[in-house]
Image (cartoon, rainbow, N blue to C red; front, side):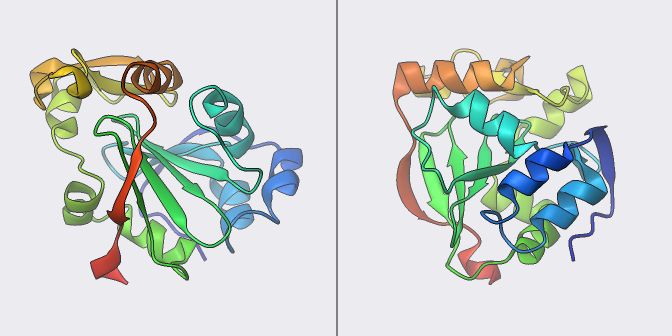
Length: 192
C-alpha cells in the first residue's frame, strides 16, 4: 500500500482515467491515484504524482510511447518516471539518459525511496534543485526548473542557471535540440 509521509495535492485524477490505466499500471497505482490524486511528494515538491492520461497526452510529441507505458511521476527538474509493464523507466532529459529498475521492483518500493533524501540526490540527481527552491519557491505542478542554457548545449549544472518553466514544453525543447534519452543502466539497483 502506497503511503507518503508528506503530500501536497494538486488535483484529483478522474475515475475514468484510473479505470483506463489500472490494468496497465503496477499494483497499488489505482489506489494511490484514488487516495492522493496528482500532487507533490515530500517536503520539497521535487517528485510529483501525475495524471497518466495527461502525461501521455503531453509527452506524445516528445517520446515514442508504447501503448503499455504509464507515466506516473515527474520531477522538479523535468524528469519522468513511467511504468512499462515489468519495470519503471526514468527519463532524465537534462542529461539525456534513460535508466530502468530491475524487473519485479514494486510501486511500494519505489514510493518508499521517493521521500529518502540521499536516494533523491544519488538516484534522481536532485541537486541543485533545493537551492533553486530556496531562491524561487517550489514550481507549480506542471512546471519545473530548467537549465538555461541547456546542459546538452554546455550549460553548467548550477542553481544560478535554473529558471522556472513549463514542464512538458521544456521536455519538448530538450528532445528537439538534443534527442531522446539513451539507456545507460539500472536505477535503484543497489536499493532492491
